[in-house]
Length: 519
Image 1 (spheres, rainbow, N blue to C red):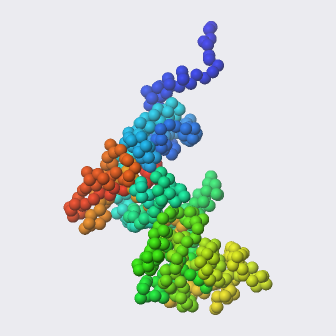
Image 2: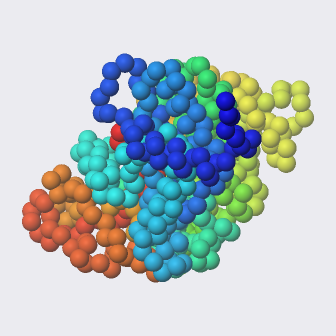
Image 3: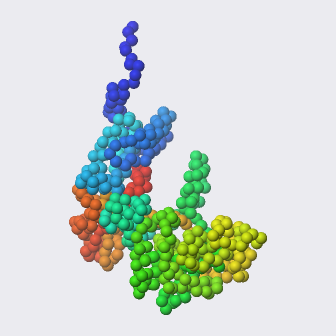
């Protein structure tokens, strides 16, 4: 008997191509649309076709493959597909840098990375591969958009955004560095532009409640992070009537979780874009210039929290809902129009931002919460944190509400002001509706038509998909679709008049939010 030589070392380059060719020939990982017995669908997050795999990819897809093979060994039928999350800004920026079409750059990268993934020997059903930048995929994304729009779950509104005046595009908060666009270096402006939104806030409470159903295997810190992201708060909506109806007729409404501090309000702050601010600036060049200054810079809460506090008095006043006293209205750069009503009641003795602002501009600071007790030293505005911090204190300097605790004060204020329609309880969420419009070329076209007569009209289902032209080489000066009448010129599906096709494209996260369901 002779024993053939066995190489003590595993020769991957000699063994694996032959085995993988055999797998391919026999279609061992191909799965039928229907199957009997136990079956399982295992999907790892699609890679972005950036050009080359890295060890993060190897780790991610190896884990998914081990799980797939484990269940196959147990006799289950396992579908493990693969695809490409292929739209997005990186491809467009790379195309600008190399002066090629994003489609060409993307599909060349896909071909290279597909070859790399196959060499890893993953148990993938490659017959089910797709790229999210192909009409076969985004046809159904546009169809989903139209269905959601018809249900009222998508709407369009003006939104304050970071605008790069050189690149002619909206920037995400993380793309703004020291007040400048990350690519162009231009000073970023705040602009109000029309954007489409997914009405995800309709599901805020449901999302929060369902976190309680996630038991086994979910880390507590992840659940806490999600609860904080949804950010349910129960507070009070308070109306400050206009004290200058001849100059500004509308009342000012604010939301607060600390209604117990109402008697400590010494000014009201509004965003630069608030109608009251714009009204006050109409005949005031200095105020108008300050509003323009506020419109430069980031719209991120985190950035505003650490930015230098800037403000200017509008010259307008509102009435305190309890005392009737005139309260000055200031424009403050730490108030965002896109959050709540774009106005806040300022209680500088008990709020860090208000305290910093009031100190800078010499505004009154009035203590109304004693969190330390009557025997402690008198309130000092330089140590406001010691008197705030929690809801455990009692009211002081608050007239008829003195001595009340947080909840008792809340209830008493509602009882007093609600019959006068000056306050009501309100639940609010930190969660915001998802703005999905992007002023970029390399993305899924938003299937909407803008008609002067009919307004925004969805593209009829039989006309889907709206095809994105793939031979465009962007130059970085805004969205090239805006310069392509052959793309945007169309007719209104309702009245037949000349109309303009929407040139904004969808945020690439829309693609990645539903591809799990494409199978």
